[in-house]
Image 1 (cartoon, rainbow, N blue to C red):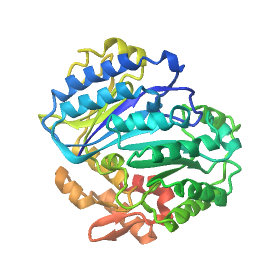
Image 2 (image 1 turned 120 degrees about the vertical axis):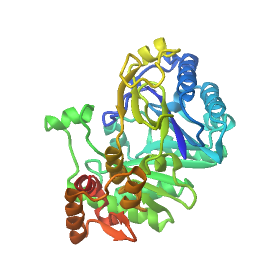
Image 3 (image 1 turned 90 degrees about the vertical axis):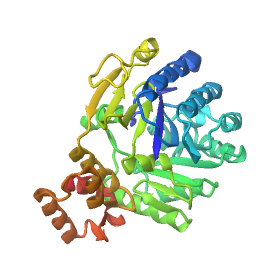
Length: 392
């Protein structure tokens, strides 16, 4: 499975918790066609350096991709399909959407250019918490956006929620998840509010000026949301993601399972295997202006050094790849077969420090092993990063 990620960097406003690259811009100032031209120029150069792959997913993230004119987004999608003619039977095409730039007309327009999955940033249903999170929409706008997507016939509709916000009781978090789920979505992502460095919330927290929910209530909220959604027939297939049968997000599963993906656009990350067998990770410039000015023919196809348009480049060795496979695979309900992954990469699965960590974690019940597959029990999922770090 091979995926393509396209980053759209513009938003109407920067949310104080967001650590993704996004730039606040007025609607009328967004260069819709110019940005599509730049992404297509990058696509032509990058695709020429790759062997034939089977395209399985395309994901437009951001930023707020629903701000992009559907015709320009569709032009990019057509270019991706032309560049990768080998495709799975039904390529998953996702667009992240915000209620402030999504309605029935936008839903139909996206559907008509080939989008078959939308992910709508509802984030919450309480006016005070939405304001605290810096969201520009009202609670009813989020519910309406989901309804518009469903009525427009978008085949797969997902919604995002944020829980663990100061002042929110666990039962309130569960109630919001239930209300959104009962609208008819087939997928729901419920993210615990995390405070990241480099964000407005991060700066406030460093000064002790950000109200936070205590860890005990965060755990209770996580368990309450998961219990509510499982009772409604959703499978919790990843720490923060719930799906009805057949509606998992295949693109994100590709990340967690260690598949290759091509990153296109300003600030996009990508990880691909080149023709010489080198596995390379890169990040494009985080500056929209630089990306727009110099994209055409300036990527120095798969250079192993950073430049004006590529801010980071790293060749991944097998040991790094295995560590990442462990870290991401343990986020999944299905877990990760560490020995199988190591065999594919040609490295030792259990060097002594990792073997000792494995035995400690098994003894404490923080991981379980079933026919070679290691998993974190659901009651310990909130601590997955700490647990995975011990095994990495």
